[in-house]
Length: 461
Image (tube, rainbow, N blue to C red; front, side):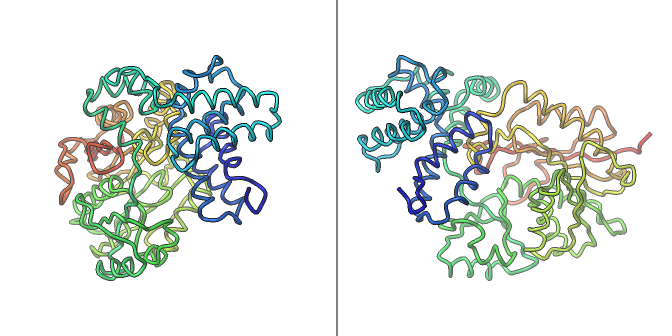
């Protein structure tokens, strides 16, 4: 029991129920619970996060194990009992620091504390059965979709989809990567500080910084903890941004270079921009290039725009202007005013499940169809902001072809745009991919990400 009277297990259970039963976002629920318990020690906070995140991540596997030892399947249990058994089973399978006896006893106590004392015996029986039989448990064959689904706790329909798109070897790499912890990747804002200065600051804090092979301006940090504890981040010298997003930003920089032969000033529109990583990247590099560029960063709500403004204030990169706008609605005042439009649109997020474990349970085949419709609605409005001869960078953080290359091809067919070879625009050690940039976790050293480069060929009729 902690000093504020709430155990980390009880708090983790609430997060698990909120995310898996109510569809809440895991990151938001974790932050909310941590904010309620400021008196927790660092070890309590770490235990809570590991237990909640791990249980959510391994939910499908945990349910399979529970069903193997319980006469009542998990889907027919009361939500609280289901959550308690999922959390208890995770401790039995994945937390060696927790004795089996303690995991069983704590599960029983949680059932009682949640007003379900009548089911405490049931919880005790299932937990003890799993503890006794866990080492001999069996799963479907590893080379079948069902086996992959259980072992990697990924919905069966997703596994089958990836097998049809990428084959067994790549799918296995994808699934494995999505259960692996992703490192903290940052972009160096070299218009504000020199690389040596940034690395020295990190070294003084005991943070290891390794160059990312895909970009000379990207660092992979080890031992950093939360970004707001990093002095170089607080000084604005660093921007947290996965290498995949940095590569998409570099495509926009190349587009700026293409138009920079014409008289400025230049305008970049970053739609759906929160939290502002691409806008910061563009503002930083434009400063180094000496280009008179304004980055107009938009998003749907004031809360999202505030995130962009916080990054602008932290970095001091005042080339960024912010606006609250619905990207689906065309603003006639901005017709053909942008040299470059970055359309990094809302998507299924299947490429970032290594960071956001709950995405796999929120996405359905039906929701993918709805997202494609939303993306095309936004693209139908946003292409009109591009000047003739200007560029549109279309990107998503997913690995779903309907949201990616099929949308890019649709855009080029429906509107006056030419698809360019995005791979030819990448620099350094970045993977050369030809027409589209499609990064896959486990195959590439990055999150899953897609980008296409399109050039405007004609005016609005």
